[in-house]
Image (cartoon, rainbow, N blue to C red; front, side, top):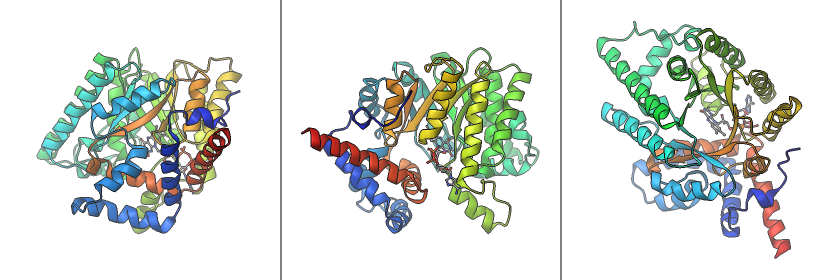
Length: 402
Ligand SMILES: Cc1cc2nc3c(=O)[nH]c(=O)nc-3n(C[C@H](O)[C@H](O)[C@H](O)COP(=O)(O)OP(=O)(O)OC[C@H]3O[C@@H](n4cnc5c(N)ncnc54)[C@H](O)[C@@H]3O)c2cc1C
């Protein structure tokens, strides 16, 4: 039986001082008004060059980010490797604009792949299409899409101007280069899921890449956000499409990180929210997606990307019920750096293939990621409480042992 109760194992890689800092941070993130204020003011203060970088670097950045450069992530990855925990490297550029910046970001992703290939414990990197494609362009393509285009890998470029068509062509070439580098270097590429109003072209392009690169092994993975009420079906349709076109489906299963933004936009623009009505519905679809994956392991590769104890446990139990090994080569687990160490380290101890998702990048570029972590740990019931309780339990254990 896998269990996530062992906090000694979960936090063995953290000193007591580091744990106390984490306790302070999670306590602060439990204060709603502080997070609201902080997430509004921080991006602005950084842009205005106010002297807050030091505070951020020593608190939230240190908890959730692997470093500012690729080299800085090495220490974290080495430490995790001592406990058989692998790493998904995430070069955290978000919200950049301009063709030069996009070219640079694509080159940086290739450098990350080449670096990962030299490291035994970095099997994957993750990318965001918005790291090298203009948001407005994706949005325009999304509007032009019908509801089957994502799954069928169809991208309708008719609505684009000639300049935009050329721009889109560059995006496709950037992604092909990234996937080619990944294939050459035997590193997996996880394409993150983003906002619903740009997601159709992201899905369509990712399906195209899977068809091209996932013939004999999985190089490219799409992300399925089960907080969307249409995604369980999308997942099943994606597998049918993969079967029809003879490629192996790679999927990362997540609940979804943009819930409040999605709901706000749907209300403001008066369209039905794409998000499930309640947490239970999201959980039900997440569980169903895990069960579906475990039934189809000969046809797909699944990454259980969640901090939910039941979701992770459910996956291990389904494997056991089928007499399949916990280290099945088509199942991987992952949690974000700084969160749910009890799940990660106990899964590793049980022999599962598991990683930490390790973002890195210049402080100003990872701010949107940090703000999402702060919001997630504040507004969504459960996570802060869970982290705090675990940290407190471990601090108490250490006090009693001393
Ligand atoms: C390795 C990794 C990669 C990730 N990649 C992505 C990605 O590419 N794209 C992305 O969007 N997110 C991504 N995430 C974040 C993820 O989507 C979740 O935000 C986060 O993991 C919290 O969900 P959970 O499964 O850990 O568990 P829980 O804490 O059990 O669930 C919280 C989640 O449930 C959902 N939820 C909460 N309340 C409600 C409600 N009232 N109604 C409906 N749903 C609700 C929300 O999605 C919320 O984030 C990733 C997470 C991990 C660990």
